Amino acid sequence: MSQPVAPAEIRFAPEFDQPVRYMLRTRSYYLGLGYENPYVWAHYIDAPFTPLKKPLSASRLALVTTAAPYQADKGPQGAGAAYNASAKFYQPYAGSMASKPDLCIAHVGIDRQHANMSDSECWFPYEAAQAAQQSGRIATLSPRFYGLPSNRSQRHTVEIDAPAIIAMCQADAVDVAVLIPNCPICHQSQSLLARALESAGISTVVMASAKDIVEYCGVPRMLFSDFPLGNAAARPNDPESRATNFELALRLLESAVGPRTTMQSPLIWNEDPSWKLDYSNIERLSPEEVVRLKAEAEAVRETAKALRLKTVGK
Image 1 (cartoon, one colour):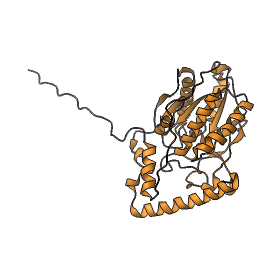
Image 2: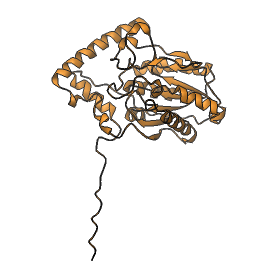
Image 3: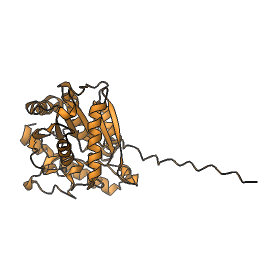
């Protein structure tokens, strides 16, 4: 008589292998550093929605970034650079798409332990966008890309920065925009801009890695990649992931039937999901590290404050 076959063991993924809850993580982190009055994130129930007015093959597409142009006099900004507040910018800008821009993300709170800071295609999908134009997937790219400041003040983003970006897009006859944020606040700023662009008649998709922040704010369309902060567009040095994610963003522009449509990229960062446990995790820091990080945070705040006062006067 044959022996009964034991049922296969049921194996689940570890509990932490899910999208990082960045709002909760950063709240705990700054409370742990001794900062009171937790940050209040932008939150809406409804979201505007502008369907495509014409096929993508007849549309002009723009890229919107929170990355900053490299500034030689502002200290380290490339691979391995520490948080560099002196490289921040506080006014929206536009740059030429005629050649690949030199954009850096050292000025914002990305995942420095796990994100790649060398391959700019991870945060600015220039080559994928150019390929979409060359193949006829889109009609043309805007002659300019646009830079949105990462601003903790939601009012400033909504009332000053977003209208400036909208005016630039309208001047360049942009039909659709792909927004790529980097740090937690970048995700909020880009989400607020997506809402404003849609209200102005420009269809958008946010290529995000902080799912909770974007969905909490409420956007028309989001392509979520479960990648470290700062690398929302692609895995480093991986042309196939660039093409895959950008095509998914385009498909989402075409297929979303209403606001708050989220698509998750099937790509994973790597086989080991433990990277998700590290970013701003106060529980993994020693008392000595907490003291050091508090001092660093204060220094960054002073540098950023001085630059902001010099740039925008407040």
